[in-house]
Image (cartoon, rainbow, N blue to C red; front, side):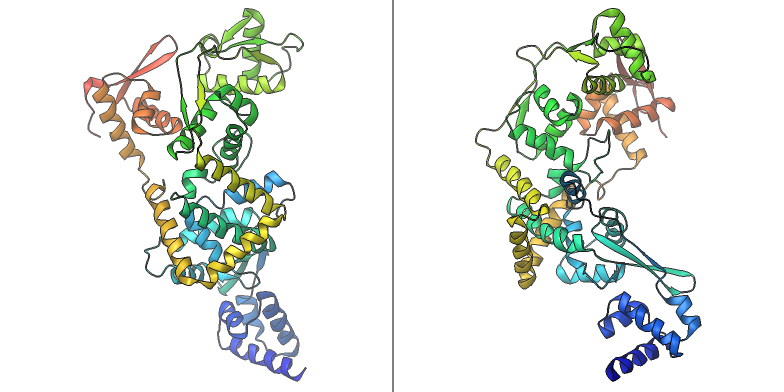
Amino acid sequence: MVNEEARARNIASHFNRGDDIPALCKRFKVTPAELIAALKAGLEIGTVNQGQYQARVIQGSLQFPFPDESEKRLDNLLKCLNSELKLATFFALRRGITASVNELAERIEHLVPDFELPHETTFGGYCADLFLKSGFVVQERYQRYQSVDVRQYGLTEAGFRYAQPLAAHSLVFAVEHNFSLFSLFGLGKSNREGDVACPLNRVHVLEAVGKGADTFSAVADLSGFNRESVKGQLQALQDLGILTFETTKQDSPRYAWNRDHEVEGLVVGEGTLAALLHQRGSLTSEELAARSEMDIRKVRDTLSELRKKGYVTSSDYTPGGQSIVVVENSKLLQDVLEYVGFVRGALQDGPQLQEAQQTLASLRNDKNAMALYLEHGIAAYLQISPFRHRLSSAEREMIALDYITSRGEIQPKDVAEGLEWTASTTYRIINQLESTGKVTRRVEGNIPFYSVKGGEPENS
């Protein structure tokens, strides 16, 4: 009891002379909660300055729950593992005692001392956004001075139990297979409705192929996405060498209205297509786009939703149509599927979790191995990171103008393919060019063609 009182008075003394909260936690080896309790006790007996306490002590904490449902757990985890920089951030976090962004950056520099890392705000951004909302970190807010907020981060129980060990397992897996996890998972978006480009949905497409789906239609049915979305995911997997697919010319599928359902009561886009199908019998998506004057992508997305609800039926692709051909005896495909299965098992407290914890302990005990794995992994990520080499809109406009000029007249999809841009980025840039009069559009049937006004790019 005497020792506890002496420590409390010692804490109060250092606090009153200006030591900040993180320094006190570190000096006395206590958690923020324990420190606050000691300072509150000091307030009551008069050893802690009340004005300093009100100005500098923790103002609150924020923590999101970690879900119980297995797919939501997997979604939360995968979007936090799609970059080796995120893995390094997990290794710098601790359970119990939070750390400032600056302290986290210093810890990461200690893990990879011979590697040039991005600015510390990168790691703070991971914690404040993805890690926090996924339930893996807690955010505690202090005021070091009256007008300066200080936020610190530490692992939650879910972050300590699942995210940190699985980060270690994922790092070893990616480095030993010589690719970045970003190549496998893509952008770390959430698995919300309509957002196909997220790690979990890429896993769903991959698992559909693993189950034997060998046509776009089969993968779309198993994964729940439309064919265009499936094609984009498969292209990313092909770039990584997991599989290869071929496309051949075929007739578009024809859609027909299910007469068991009424046309009335649907939302605007669905109602428009439903009325056309009810009147015409069966139409392709291109024919529906032309008759409804809706964007072809909007038509396909709406048809996909109507098909899921059972309102619309479609003929499948004709024989000899689009198909997926998995690389024969693809070891990488099997390895990735096993990796995903491993993560699923660990998140359900299977024996895989203990194996991942052992991998983490092994890396922590061998600092050279940890540094080598992180250096190799981060280097692989930085080579392909879209944020490391992001182009401005002005730069993309000039590149697109040059490319369109070299082709004379071209469709947007061919621009996207030639420049290796996403469809959404390509359409956005072309729309900007058209709105400023730098390109002109000619429509043939329902297909737009673009050319540079005057035959050459105009100076901005």
